[in-house]
Image (cartoon, rainbow, N blue to C red):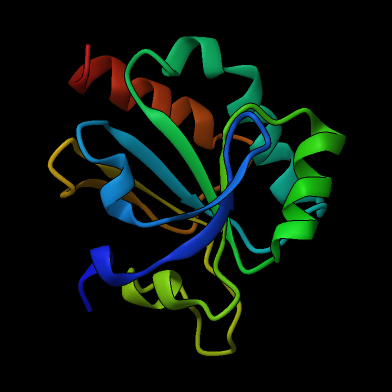
Length: 146
């Protein structure tokens, strides 16, 4: 499956709803991170870490979170946690399956991809720890993108 063919509903950093494809992020380096579920402890920690470090990473990458939750859940998660990045809804787990982050039991593996300006996957982080992951990303960005 071509990632460009996957269309997902999303809510941007300003709270505006629209349909996205990976092509919408061309010409940008993108941190595309998959998380299992809105408003759960690990997912909230990870989202807060991205939110709280946005000033350090937004010069180099655009952050996009993806989970199977619907748009209404994302709106609640975003507003309740004052999130400053785009969230995509992947209820059919199309994108998750295309990037092999859908587990055999249907759950989502907490994983992150750095997609370069040409739409290629430059780096993958699998089975990440939400408490430490932002440090791994910031270290990589500092070494490779600055």
